[in-house]
Length: 448
Image 1 (cartoon, one colour):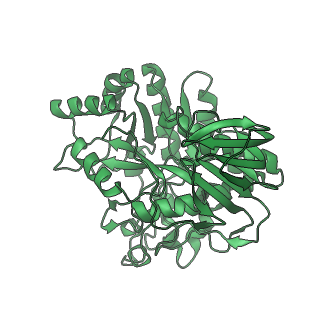
Image 2 (cartoon, rainbow, N blue to C red):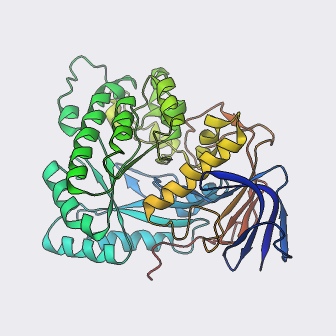
């Protein structure tokens, strides 16, 4: 069936124009005027038409520490498409008693037939025997080209030191792997003197994970990635210092970075609340957000991603009140990504639409290696489309529909999702699912 989206402002690849959009056979057929008749028409008058959004950093259907996350693939992709996100990238971490391939097959099985949005995965290896290396190379050949690594979390078995990272860069980099790094200097974290810190206060979390640890790790990783000539993506940047170093490094190497809405619009004062533990995430919420947002407006962040990591309310509150290191560490965010990003440029809707098309569509698709299918409204690309009305009624921004504390209480937005299409088929109309039982999401890579 052909679908014609007419009378809208098309935002794609950082540009905005008044044009119509023709969809056919699950892809974009044409952008322009006088595109002919179609069996289905969508009137986008007064709206901006964007490519489906891509969230590069999402945790769903996983166990972190003691707790199962509140969102699985169905509920996570449901809240995603209702908020314009048509592709999300989740994580597969190799467990101590399994191969990386086994962990991946388990994740794909849990997602199969349950997704409203498309899903792909980043891989985190934790064992490095000969068989593990051979399997990693096989998975890269199968299309898995993004690997997530950590410079901390030694106790969880995720830590990679400089020698290990160098080996990964050297062996997998020439195969076309893109490396995502959680950057906190583990030695600096371990050196924090806790004797004078009141660990019963949520604000102590920021002292346990100081800004210097992020800046130090980013500086070291930029140098190593540059020497090895591999593409580096730094996840959830939270500090001005790290953002500035990455910005300056772009002139000499292939490096990108992301930040999340929590680091743009929340600050460390949330941790001072009596229930401040409900805002715990890593890296912690910081100060100096005005300068941080100025960097965002200057283009320091290639993309925005949520690090969606929702814990049930009972699990978030399940700690003894004496040591914040026992608190479930993460925040939900999927439902707020578009609205919190748009807010940066809300007074200039054309610019907001253009920036969103870059930082929530094209750039994350590029880093995922999905730019041949996603990230823009161009002929031949997937017909994932968002019709956005910036002048809807003010409504509360909800990060998730699951039983989790929302990190943005009191935040509202007038952005209204009039239509969301996945592979050319309508999935959302006026903010609600068209058919709750229809699961149109595909799993990438499509090798099964």
